[in-house]
Every structure is written in C-alpha cells, then in structure tokens.
Amino acid sequence: MPYLFLAPAMALFVAFFAVPIGYTLYLGTRGTKVSGLGLGKGSRREVSVGFDNYQATLTDHEFWAGWLRVLGYGVVVLTVMLGLAVLFALLLDSAHARLKRVSRIAIFLPYAVPGVVASLLWGFLYLPSLSPIHAVLHWFGLQANLFDPDVVMFSMANIAVWGGTGFNMLVLYTHLRSISPEYYEAARLDGASEFQIATRIKLPMLVPSLILTTVFSIIATSQVFTEPMTLRPISNTISSTWSPLMMVFTQAFKNLDLYSAAATSIVIAAISLVLSFGFLRVVRKRAFSEES
Image (cartoon, rainbow, N blue to C red; front, side):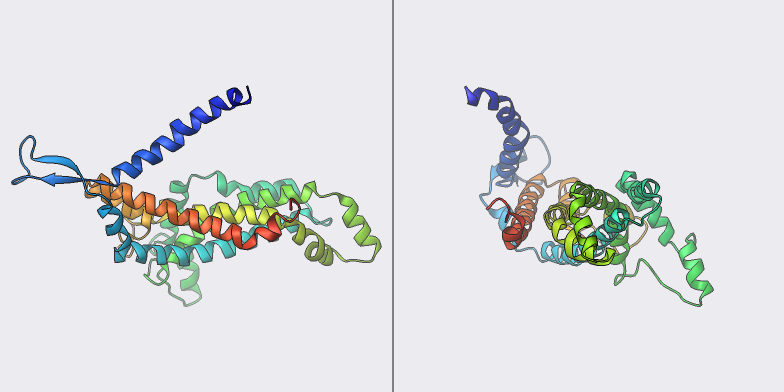
C-alpha cells in the first residue's frame, strides 16, 4: 500500500529524469558513418561507436581549458556573492536596521531580471562608446577595457553577483528570522554588542543555510552559459567554447554533432555532481551535526 502512494512520484521521476538521462547516455555511444561523398539518401547512417565520444571529450584540451575558466569564474562569484549575501542578511537583521522592507526589495530586485536581459544591460554598460562607467573613469584620467581577455571573466562574474546576491541574501535572512530572539536577549544581558551577536551567534547558526546556498551556487556557476553567450556578439575575446556548456551548444547546433554534444553533457553533469557532493562531503560534519 505505501508503494501505491509513491507511484505518481516514481512515474514522474522515471519520465522526466531517468529516461532523458538514459537516452542522453545512449546518444553518447552513437555516431554517424558517412558513405561516399555523404550525398544522397542512405549515405549517412547512425552506428555504435562505444565510448569514443566520451573519450574524445575527456581528452579534449579545449574542454578542460573551459573548465579552468569556469573554475576561476566560480571562485570569484561564490566568494563575492555569498560574502555580500551574508553581509546584507546580517545588516537587515540588525536591531538598528531601518527601512528593512525597501532594502530587501532593492537587493532582491536584480534576481527578478532575466539572465539574458541582465547580460545585455551590463554588456552595453561595458561598451566604451555607451557606458557611463568609462565616462567616470575617463573623468579621473583612467582607461579600462572591460572586455579585455584578462578582465572579461570578472565582467561576467559581476553580472552573476549582481543577479544572484538578492536570492541568497533572502535565504540567509529568512533563516535568521527563524532563530529565537531569546538568544539575542540573553547575549545583550551579558553585555554583548551587536557585532559580537552577529559574529558569535548569528554566523554559526547560518552555517547550514550557507552550505545550502553554496551548493546551489556551485551547480549554477559550473553550468554558466547565459552571460558568455549573450556577451559574445559584443566582444571578440569570448570564444565559442569559453565554458563547457557553450562547447555543447557549438557541437549540437553549429557542428550538428548531437552525439558528441550528448557525451559532453553527461561528462559536465558528472563533474558538477562530483563538485557538489565533494563540497558536501568536506563540510558534512558541520552541516549534519544536529541529525547525527
């Protein structure tokens, strides 16, 4: 009888999760065999290639170069975005904070802007001919190319930080509001300042939520696609394989090689899984201390 109640959830899991993954795994083992000049009916046919597509992905230098760029991008985004989210959550939860509702909406609002729109907005702000940023820098006698190959990663990270800080701040702030105020009252009676309450009581209690937002952020940054893809027509410093997902797009829709794209997608999913669970494994003692 209990299994009957689980049946709808299991059916949805199989239909929308297991079957697509299984089919993608299958596509990764297929390839196209071309006969003659590849013209005419029957000149191209699908054949099994075993694990050749997976091997080609794992030995592709450009694939790992893309991961290296994404790793640097992820370090910048996670550090700045989560740092700002923690700071804003603590400030809004402070007893001396004013205009909390307006501040929450103002910080969260960028998250409501679609990623493509945000990337276009910042892309135009980065252009020297249109940007007030360059006008301000020029006023101070400075010049900067925000699409320079050494800087473009930080320009894209800025878009992700601008759009994602509000969501993470809201998760952390909601957790802070669920903490009993008796802890704070007891600390104030003992003479603790607001800074000491924030660093010695609130921050330790935020650790489980901070781990959760970090895992979400790792998954999101490892699959970065919108920012480089939207900025690419504006700048020639972003290649078509800047990130691993852009490589999948290029294989599938420019090279029309769905089989290689499927194999690359599976490898990306596996690496994202390893990164997320690897992080959870490192912090598991702190994250699940209450349950254990």
